[in-house]
Image (cartoon, rainbow, N blue to C red; front, side, top):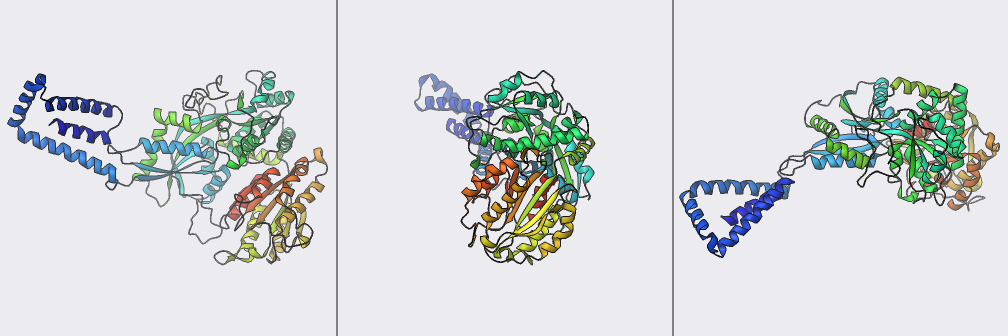
Length: 634
């Protein structure tokens, strides 16, 4: 009987957890000792053993039945765990999370999965997370989420599965999405505040002491910027069109400004500071990763308007190619206002989908779990955000660097109304620096290949460029060149730099004349384009424009012959210093056989303070739209 008891306890050990396992282990030890005593006929247990055998012989039928039932349960549980075939399929739920910080929120979802199992260790839910940037998700919600099978060229892009839960960076985001929706494809069925992250001015540790000596408690953004200047630091900020956190910073900055002219001067100063430090115009993540890459022995003398969460990431989400800088930690300086991100779990119901059932149950369970003690601890630990109590993230080993004296900031303490965000966007479009953009379009022979369906690659490129021009405003300038043939005969100007309104009227005719042929003199075209823009911006410090070269290519450098054919990626990287002095940025959109990841295009763009974006032909129009939206502000 003692042997049978030991088997039963061991079986339950396979499916139990926590304190239950401790109790079963204790029972197993007791049974093992008692069995050993019986086997050796220890005299001290002889009378007890005889009594037990006599009791069992008198009741052998019920004892056998109970033992059999227990064995059936144990064996069944062990088979369930071992095979997995008896587990019901877990309920699937798609969760959309912010692009910046996506790995941390994915880890939070994984913890929810592990925490949600049946008594026999079967998974109840399976969570799929995907990160989407603010401009892309805003566009997708406004025009319909999209249909991968849609034949309409104007259909909205497909960003991923329709999310049942969206972790918005702010309640204001959800309100903006609801106000801009042109269709009734979705409804917001619930919202729950789950976390937050205050806005900060982040300073490399090497320069923090100099700033600390020039500030006073309660200083707002305007005072902190002035103090940074006194300490010899330039202030930079991510693009408000690409970063919602930066849009909130802009709300605070414009509240402190004295009018449109003051806002224009502010935008000019912020833009020039980015260029002088060699930092990109994009998201908080892209800016901080580049700062980390540039921070060798002495980090740039800049202070970054960002969030506590982004600052704490410490490069964990940066591409491996970004290297490891030596700047040390960033130190946060907290703004006198209570502005910050208030992460809100938004429940979404979609037209044509059952609003109840297992998917809805899984979504509700996930949102509820985020508010539990366990969920809040995981958000703190994995996502570097503050829980509902407002305490600074602590990590696993105590207070994180720079947060020992950080103030408590409860999420949602100062929620910004969405109309205030939208009105600030309008002011930003007026105050921002005008853009001067030169577009290089690959028209080599490979662009005559099929892209998708009946369309050729050049047709998709033509449509994408024409659509992207709509993101520029009347104060912007744009030109279009094509490159093909050989380096000696390329590039060919199609449209000289002119107002965006003129370009939108004339570009269709010029782009329609393109006939793919010849080689791909890519490096020669980039060199010619950057040289042209540098000459235009020879005014240096007096420059006003945001100047960018946008290169669209479907292949690697194949120059043919002629002057410029011997240019290498190293030559373009070395010449980036001259471009930085004039504020020229290079952006590459790689499609087809071209790739940012397995070529020198990413490094070339980074050295020219720009970015390389991989795209498919199906996504090319939305990719170009997102890029020009950053440059043109709409």
